[in-house]
Length: 220
Length: 372
Image 1 (tube, rainbow over the protein chains, first blue to last red):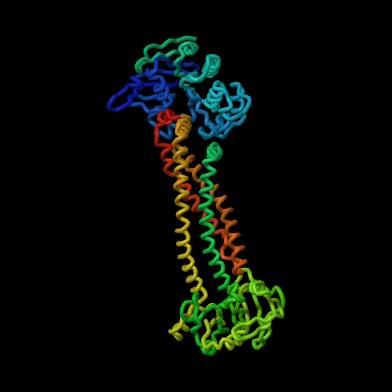
Image 2 (spheres, rainbow over the protein chains, first blue to last red; image 1 turned 30 degrees about the vertical axis):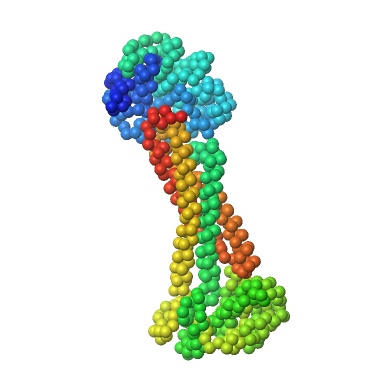
């Protein structure tokens, strides 16, 4: 289980902006969580705090009762490599590595032996059969490669920050289908998105306003 | 995977890295070709010292810029001591051809000694000298080529005329430029009162140092040195030359380091988002630091490989010209020089990559990802 405990993040020193304000919430395996809200509501910051990419000013995050912020930065990085996957809005595939190498990168960062068969299998499952350089794929394909990279090492939690922000509606639907499928496989999926329609296809929709949870809707 | 990332990140933007590698290659080639003069000098001196095989030398002034200041009788005085084989060392530089087309070294061969007086030469035509009183000469291959001489011709040395009985050559080239005649006749032709040095090979070589000490006390007005002492002296002289040559090549090396630093700093700036993503996916700061540093070192090593090849071509070219003009090879490529240039290249890689590598890990992940 992933648990946020009184998570607070403030930016700026002279002009203080409270991006996330005392959020406490528990994320359970096998469910897809959508975080929605207007720009500046703290969606991305919350995602970065939950994934231990960013450090909170107050509060902490527990994963299976392990306090992520009791570790130093390098330990947190290694923890992320073992337990978390991350998908970004701009795909962020490494441009000089091909699709397969981008996926294999995760094994390297996790410190495990690169499993070529597993990487190819994950890519195929996401509809990527041909191995090329990232720029040779369409946006939708690039996002699917990014998802393959995130899940190749079988992480416990998958975070996605606006994963459909650069995709058309068809590809956006495909991406959400994949995310839900991953969640139904017993993983925790946390997605920050603007798209309320797609968000509703997740099990839980968390609505943020001014860095706080305004509402939690439980759906399918 | 680490190597794949380092290599592929270089080949992703090939032009800038090719230019950087070329710059490094030129600097390394400059270093190698300049330093190869020192290595060449070391090799020639070492061969010379090994070839002459004296264990103790008695001379006056500077052995490397010699003036014949040792009286002829000195050899007899030393012989009387019965400490070993003694021979007279006479060497004269003589212009060859008219107008002069080069310099030959006229060497006097001391038949009185059982020891070999000159480096290991090979007779490539004719035969060796047969008698200390016969006006016979051996000439180096280069001298023969320059003057168009062959076996049976006559060569003039001072007031004497000698029949060429053999043509010689040697690996280091000393004999290639030599005219070898019996020392007695050479002294007579030039009417020498003094010779360059007296050389002694002690009967008991293990006592060389104590004999040299005793000779120093007996002949306080002369320089008495063992081969080993001479080797140390030459080594220190060449080492000073090495420092000067390294200082000269340091200018190009400095420029190469600065350009590597600039390219790495630009690359890191452009790849900030990439490092942010890698860290978000689980890379530690140390890994990112090592990636950037490894890339810089890899570039400098590629520059070294190219520079090494270029340096060897330059050395070969210098040697071809030097052999044509002077009859021996000036420069030498050695394993030591190769390793030294490798260390310099690695140093450039570290110096050029260290601060960009620090720059790559300085930003927070969010800040880094925010930069595209």
